[in-house]
Image (cartoon, rainbow, N blue to C red; front, side, top):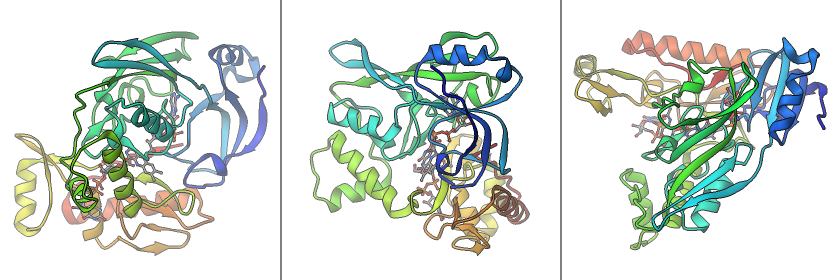
Length: 341
Ligand code: FAD
Ligand code: EPU
């Protein structure tokens, strides 16, 4: 059964809390519903938006003239096991953070550093979610998709997904073509490789007197760090980092460093470095600034917030002003991480 709704308010379906209504809206729990849906003449030529938790998108207009397909495909299934590893095939509509906690509770390692990231399992491959030294590509075995072009399902392996920093095939050549239905993860059962290089994780473990590392301890540390600087979307509308951290050439960095002696960086390769966008935005004086209904978060300059009642356009205008000032002061182009709809 398909329950097609019309003129649905999407305010509670996006963590920015932007008011936007969709011409058509449907929730999908099974793959066969998706096929049936596309056979409806009404929807054949409609533009589509696959929606997870709405935590990485911005509605730029107050009307979406198309069909929103809310992903509610659930289930966690063990599909393979060896002495060292376990493969879990997970419904794309499962919420990400509860899935991380499920893994931690079952002593399955690999995604504990990705604790507390909002959104759905199905959106995780989309931008190759990452935090605290881990990217989800490190544990993705395969991604099952429904292809809107052919109305068939297929499986893509890790290499097919062309993962990069906040990038994938699904954001580029495969944009708007697929509905991700399941993701299969390869997780460790023993000899977990825990990543604690991020300074703040080590500091937390020391502060809590934790000498014996465990998946739970790493997850708890990440949760505590995130809570201390990222705004909770339930309280203040936001979509996490609004921009990506830009990669520049080492040569450009060396030149900039002459003027900006404290400029931080992370090495990418022997010719490139990554500069924290939060630092650039803060240096340009935006941190904590409020303009109308929107602003730049006071604890994390990379996060743009909706203090309530903002329109998508106001956020776009602020984002563009930030881009202009970073370009003017540092010659660096900031790219948006959030998906504009
Ligand atoms: P949505 O916002 O619903 O969708 C995002 C995009 O993916 C859209 O283009 C949508 O069409 C597409 N999409 C969603 N589901 C599917 C599907 N099943 N098939 C095909 N396309 C799909 N991200 C990080 O990487 N690291 C972080 O540390 C991080 N921290 C965050 C902190 C906060 C407070 C917030 C609000 C966001 C943060 N994010 C972070 C961003 C966001 O949580 C992730 O990108 C998340 O994976 C988005 O999931 P979602 O289900 O909400 O996706
Ligand atoms: N910084 C500032 N001022 C700020 C914020 C950051 O100077 O207001 C500088 C500091 O030098 C700090 C550095 O930036 O040491 C890094 O800051 P942080 O550790 O907070 O991480 P980030 O680079 O701002 C990235 C991801 C986050 C992820 C964290 C933790 C991107 C675009 N963002 O942020 O992901 O949670 O690292 O790994 O890569 C998201 O994608 O939505 C997201 C929140």
